[in-house]
Image 1 (cartoon, rainbow, N blue to C red):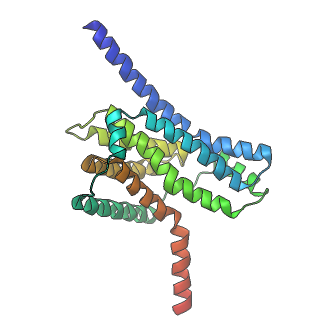
Image 2: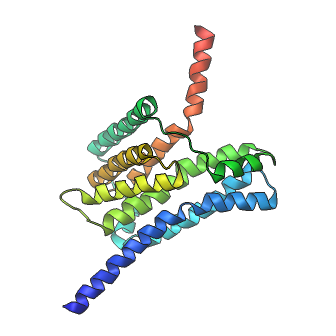
Image 3: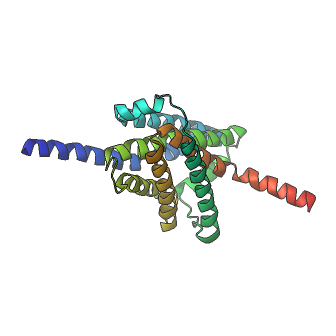
Length: 243
């Protein structure tokens, strides 16, 4: 009895350590890529390449952390249910509305960190079009896979799995918010809104029981963010051309 309790405690502590390491390691890829680019005196395009390689590696590590059932569900072929598609569209619209609401009423203040200084230094070495493509690849493809493998695939299946009170969704959403505080701006608004986004994606994962469609939802959200400058350009062009 005591030995069984000790084993369970050890296993639970291992899971907590994995989560803590996962939150700490998210700072490494970009910072390391910036230092390497400065050392090699290469442009910003090399930064996106170095970050992509590291994030792909972390995605593979995150995939290996998933239990066998979760891994098999990713590759399992299944028909897309109409109600899944409906909830997918509603969830995506909710996130875009929340972005507008945040920008309008609760903007996140810009706090300059070390990375901003490093980026300015690297910009002097030159900026190439590969940097934009690389950022798009990271934001729309690699990041959704990595974050969903970790936050939904691992956390939700290791902590409070299938909780009737949706504690798995709440816990993973809170970690999602904390992760973006560490990675981005240390402000309460950052935690609040990214936690809300995490609740939506965690809820969709619980509803659809499909990690790959949750990754698609995350990718569509990030795609909208990546294309924001394009939408602004198109709007301004139409406005000043046809007014």
